[in-house]
Length: 336
Ligand code: GZL
Image (cartoon, rainbow, N blue to C red):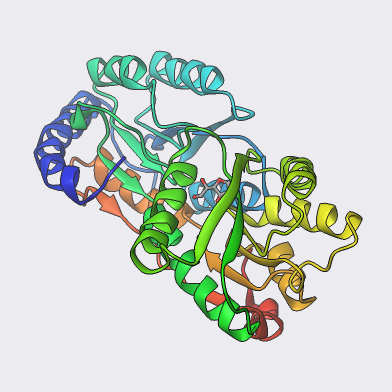
C-alpha cells in the first residue's frame, strides 16, 4: 500500500518502471504504437476487475469501459468475482497475449509479487487502479490511480462528530463497524484512519464494541448487522466501509424494530445513488465520497505509461463529504 513513507522510496521505482515502460515502448517500436486515433495499431489494455460486489464497483466498471472506448483502445476485461486466483489467471493471460499495458484493482493487498514479476519480465507495465498492493519491489507497478482510503477513514470519523452533535447525542458512543473485504486496502485503511481520529480525539467517549467484515456486499451487511444487534442491542452508531453494506444493515435494523438514522446513526463511504437515496430518506446520516469514475484518468495514464513518460506514483481522485441535509439537492447531479 502506498503511504507517505514508501511514497518516497517509490520514486526510485518510477524510474525503473518508466525505464520498463520505455523498454515496452521500444519493444513496440516495431509496430506503430498509435492508440488508434488515426490508423496504426490500437493500444491494447488488459484490465482485471475485482468483481461486481457493489454499486461502486459497477460504476467503476462502466467508467473504465466507456473511457477505453472513448480513447480508442482495445480493452480486454475480466471480472474476478472477488477471487484473487481469478485475477492472477487473467493477468497471466494478458501477459501471454502480449498486451501493451495491464491495469487491475487488486482484491486484496498481498500475494501479487510472483505474477507482477512475470509481467515485468515480459516488459509489460502494470498500473494499479482503485486499490493498492503491498510489495517490497516498488518497480512491479508504475502508479496507482485511486483514493486515499486512510483519509476516507479519518473523514468518516470527523463527519461522525458532526452527526453526533446534530443528533444531540451526549455521553459515550458505542460503535459497530462493518468492515470491507478482509485484506482489501480500503478495508484496512478506512479502519486505520477512523481509529486514528478515535484514538486522538475520542479515546474516552467512543468505543468500537463490535467489528466484522460484510465483504462490501448488501447481503453481507444485512447478515452481519443482524448478528451485531443480537449481541449488542444498544449500538449508537454504525460505521460501514461502503454504502452497500450500510443499505443491507438498514434492512436488519428495521427488522429489529429500530429506526436507522435515528436510533442508530449511520455513516458510510462511497456515495452511490442508492446511498444518497437512503440519506434523503433519513436512514443514513452522512456519506464520505469515494469516487469510482476513474476511467478517464486511468486511460490518460495508460497512454503515458505506454509512451514511456514519467507519471506520478499516486494519482489521487477528488472527493467530497455529504451530510444528510445535502442529499436531496445533490441527488439530481450525482454521476453514479
Ligand atoms: C473503494 C473500492 C471499494 C468500495 C466498495 O475504492 O475498492 O470496493 O468502497 C467496493 O463499494 O466494493
